[in-house]
Image (tube, rainbow, N blue to C red; front, side, top):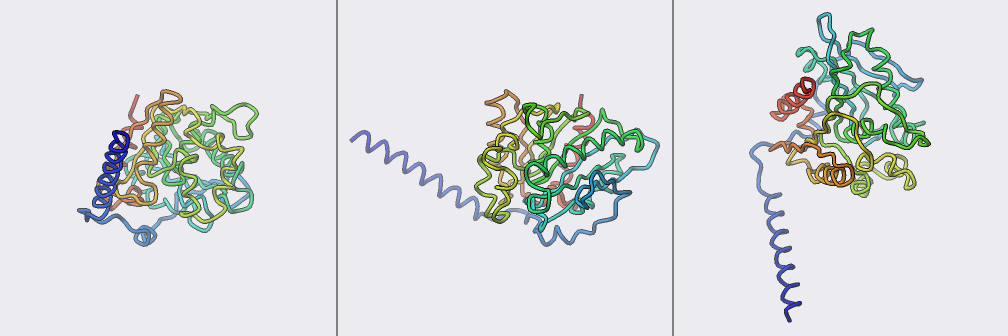
Length: 303
């Protein structure tokens, strides 16, 4: 009898938690999150210049340069879009360029071959990100970039790639993805990003379509491409989540933080932004952008 009563008590607690969670999801927010349609309608200016690092049109970087002689701090951005060529390319984040340059920050916005285009997936997508970051180091003198003041930022799928890029130096030498950054980012900031593919991978087919995760993270290569299985080299890791994000909810950041802390002792900073959805974090007119901008500026200033 005591065992049955104990199970009943646990069951009642779980039911109560489920009811509470459902009520919280139904409770109207004080502000509606930015919808995908509204995000797509944001005007996107042309960059100052575009830099190629490979033969594919996807292997390029949008560069936004601030006025002045420099040396300029650099915000490296990696766009999201489900790792899919049918969803988004690097033009997705061009509207952030002027937001940064008016504050004296250069923007190096990386494009890459996505999982469902020729040469993308494993290993091409990851090698592209590494090559684009190597290109930043090579071209820094020409554009008067200060490589001692760099932050690496990724949104959504780009958050996964940013976290991975900061960790690729911990891969074994025999991995085709192994390589060390030629600079040490002061911070890596994931905006609604995916840090642990081993837990989130099951949701990718629903969100992004079939075949993406299989091309991006084959079973025998998962530990090479899931940031939670690697050790980052950045000075700090910041996981930013919109509380109302239904695509990549805050628990995704928590899972990454728990896995990383348990394995390597690294403790990412967790930032939950109230009333923010998935796209608010990269929409300048949304209140949450001010929080993101402060994190970028703080990362560049940190020592």
